[in-house]
Structure formats: C-alpha cells, structure tokens
Length: 179
Image (tube, rainbow, N blue to C red; front, side):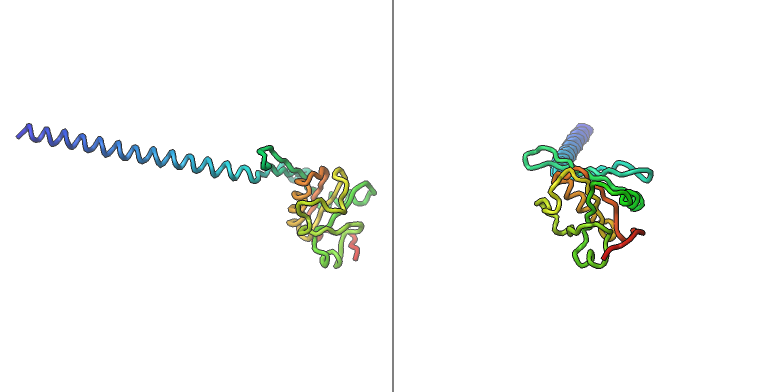
C-alpha cells in the first residue's frame, strides 16, 4: 500500500510541476506579447508628436513640438508665449514685427488690436500664408481666448517660421481696439 501511495504522490508531484510550468509558460508568453504590443504602441505614438514646455510665470515660455517626418528624420517646431501685458509693452514701441489675429473674419471685423492683420487659424494649413512671406519676420499671434493662437503658432512654426510669439486672446487685451 505504501508503494501505491508513493506512486500517487510522485504522479501528483509531476502533475503539479507540469501545471506550474504550463502557467509559467503562459505568463511569460503574455508578458512577451504585451511588451511587443506596448513597444509598437509607443513607437507609433512617438512618431506623431511630443510636446515640451520650457519656462513659466517669471518669463517667456518656449513650446517645442517634435515629431518624425515620413523619412524618419526629426522635426522640431518652436514658438514662444508671452503675456498680454508683455505684448502690450512691445506694441507701444514701433518695430519690425507683424501682429496676426487668427480669429474668423467676422470676429476680426468686430474689433482687433490696431495694426493687426487677419489670417484665420482655419486657413493656416500646409501652405505658407501669402501674407507672411518672410519666415524670419517676428510675428505676434493672438485670437479670442488663447486656444487658436497656440494652434496657429504651432502650425506656423512647423512650416518653418522662426520668430513666432503667441500672446493669448483679445479677451485679455486692455489697450485700444480698432474696428
């Protein structure tokens, strides 16, 4: 009887080992498959866009948008953000800069910062705007609240414009308004 019990115990031990090996194999397989899937997901998403914001409340903020072009080469687009008060001080002095209002034409007609030109954010696509022939020109960009100006600034910077300064929305403007 003891011999039979030992055989059953040995067989039971083998079954436990097989089960443990099977479970370990499944776990390892799941980990490997998950790792490959996560790596592929990260690779695809890194090709799209990564955003870095440098700066803060005490000075201008530079925003970098980085991605990869079709050939695998990196693309970096940069613009600077300043406060509405900083922009107002700059605009008190004459200078070689453009002010671009990226709201719709009807919004622009209701009132805009003096001297601003209107190029709607929706009209800024892959082609360079005809109103902005010089890619090295200092261009100050604003909209109604600051959202579209950030979008437009990123698009212009991605097109190769080198001196884009985003300064928010006309809702915060305390200066003169032209109609």
